[in-house]
Amino acid sequence: MTRPQFVLFGSSIVQLSFGNGGWGANLTDLYARKADIVLRGYSGWTSRCALQVLDKVFPKDAGVQPSLVITYFGGNDSIGPHPSGLSPHVPLSEYVDNMRKIATHLKGLSETTRLIFLGAPPVNETLIQESKRLTSCTFLKDLVRTNELCGKYSRALIELCREMDVKVIDLWTAIQKKNDWLTTCFTDGIHLTAEGSNIVTEEILKVLKEANWEPSLHWESMEAEFSEINPFGPVNSDGILALNPSEWDFHRNVQWK
Ligand SMILES: *[C@@H]1O[C@H](CO)[C@@H](O)[C@H](O)[C@H]1NC(C)=O
Ligand SMILES: *[C@@H]1O[C@H](CO)[C@@H](O)[C@H](O)[C@H]1NC(C)=O
Ligand SMILES: *[C@@H]1O[C@H](CO)[C@@H](O)[C@H](O)[C@H]1NC(C)=O
Image (tube, rainbow, N blue to C red):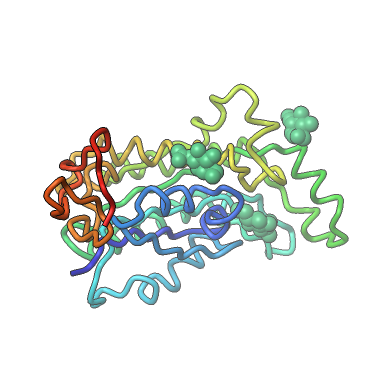
């Protein structure tokens, strides 16, 4: 028996998602005994980097294919070009092409591999400038990352996903709906605090609940593994183990074996 696998694939917003009250940790907690949450996050990567290793991270002939892949690239792609040509910048049309190739590959893994793409979250530009002041690297200081550019890449991804019938979460809009998003959602203007991450978790759960996927991948609809075997469960008045949790009646004199 194999437990369904959910893979989180993307750049730093994914790599960091298990720390600091992150959304990956949220999902791991909610899906305990229901799905294995597998982290495949690579800080600093763009969609161009992702394409190079797609076959290695998601081989077509793997014994077990993921039930769900949550993918995020775009933040680094949307950074403006640098005169040296060394910026992580990926032009918008190439970004869309790359994401199309990633979606096509992931869809082809199995009939039941479901996808959710995350659009680039917004940024607090002032906070980015402040964080950059601490670095002595002039190259980093020269890189331009604006909220408007994040929005542009996010809108392009949403359009692609609609066209390809892939579920997509508009984090750029969802996070900016929170009144105090500029001061509560980021650690350094880009990366998410627990409060920022909580919005990501809620948006993902909304998609999982509303999707008409068979079988449903929402945690409340999934069975807990081995829920029928509980050697230390309560026994009923005849001393027989109450195997089915619905038989447990905690208001009566339940004894624990
Ligand atoms: C995510 O985790 C944080 C930190 O542990 C917690 O405060 C929050 O309620 C969790 N969010 C969800 C939707 O489970
Ligand atoms: C790429 O983006 C990540 C956050 O998504 C950030 O930590 C990193 O600094 C960015 N890379 C550059 C070169 O700005
Ligand atoms: C960005 O974050 C800083 C620090 O939390 C805050 O002072 C500032 O008001 C925020 N907003 C903008 C637009 O910079």
